[in-house]
Amino acid sequence: MTDKGDCSVGCQQLINFCLDYIEGDLPEDVQADFRRHLGQCSDCVNFFETYRRTPEISREVLRTHIPPSVKQSVLAYLRERMTDDGIVPRS
Image 1 (cartoon, rainbow, N blue to C red):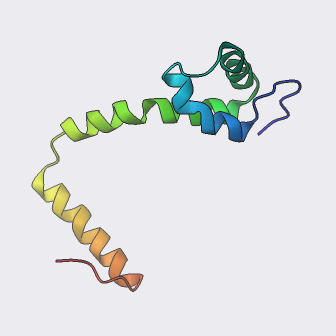
Image 2 (image 1 turned 90 degrees about the vertical axis):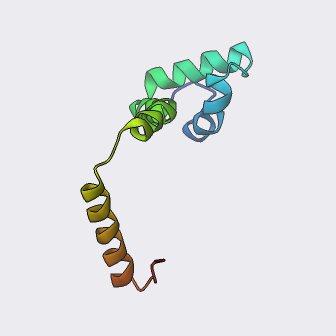
């Protein structure tokens, strides 16, 4: 993350304020600082865009039909990894 100069919202605050910003619950001055910080910090832009898009992407994934063979392959891989890591998978 980069130096934010005179912006009063830092990286950690931006992370903490994401939901309030999206829902419009931040005071105007904090919203302005939030946007200013995003204009100065590419790491926070990447985080915020990921945070903002996660519900949308999740809904898209849930609508996607996964072929049974792919599902079984993924489950077998995960069970194998869990066993390799000493975790007993559920049946």
